[in-house]
Length: 159
Image (cartoon, rainbow, N blue to C red):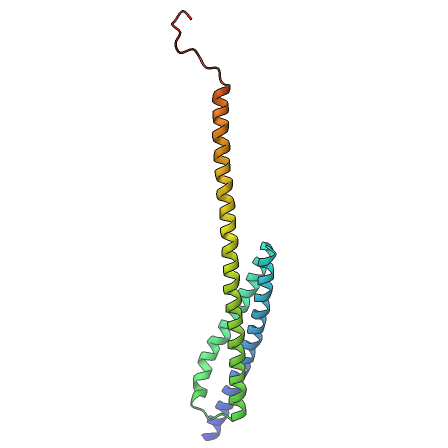
């Protein structure tokens, strides 16, 4: 009975290691995509940015799937006795994944601020363009009114 339990622990430990390594790889890819995202935002490459965001969503979906599977396996290991080297390896991987995800979140915050500044600049330009158009229309309507012949409103019916 003990060997079955040890075998299950070893299997779970191996699976958790695989899942964390997968998460590390996905976090690394996500970090790379975040850096590309920043470049595309700086260059105002909207189409390429949309393509990149679709790729990022796929990576995030894969990361979430790995985390979901991890939630089913990892709790069984919490009570198990793992070797110090395995525990150390798992902790190092988890720390690396966390660090990479923190970098991605920091880049996203910076990009969000950059996009806000760009949005506000466009809003200001559109507002100025709208005001200029209103002024132009006002001048045009005055000019058209001045160009129309004005009847003599003080004349009688004889002229």
